[in-house]
Length: 232
Image (cartoon, rainbow, N blue to C red; front, side, top):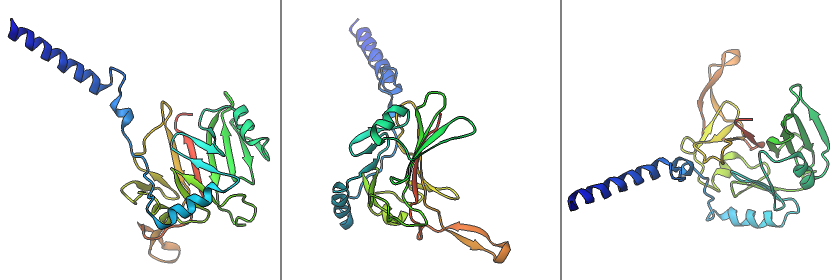
């Protein structure tokens, strides 16, 4: 009887451990997976940029699951009224053919897209660089994943301030970059586009030249960060 009782207890323990590992008891292990960008606090420029950021009148922080302007937070799914409360009336409002619309805050280089269905945020972007420079931009530094980014800093310069590495944690498309395997936010997955143009070797010449191998040693400035919902 003692052996049978012991075997029964072992079976119950095994079942409980299986349920926990599979997430049936509310601890979904898959929800805990994913890469999180780690700042390089020891880099000589980090403290200098971080201190300069803290002194700015306009402070933007783009984290994985939260976007903050002067300590006021918003993110995907927030209402039109909340955005107006934080930023005030926009400089421009544009309605697209599909009925979705965006608000543009020109001086802040901020564009926020809304769904026509419920007037909630589905995407936003910070456009830090333009052809006219930054004489009217009221800030020099923003934070992306807790890492300070100075206007017109190249992607490779920025990556030295954190643990982003080409091929390992930083992937690229034809015209932008993205974070590989980034940890997701809640039910709605979001995507982040880093608007820096990848460099490629030219193969051939003249009109017959095509893009060849990716060149990780060279990088362009980061012109934008774009955060969107993957299931609008």
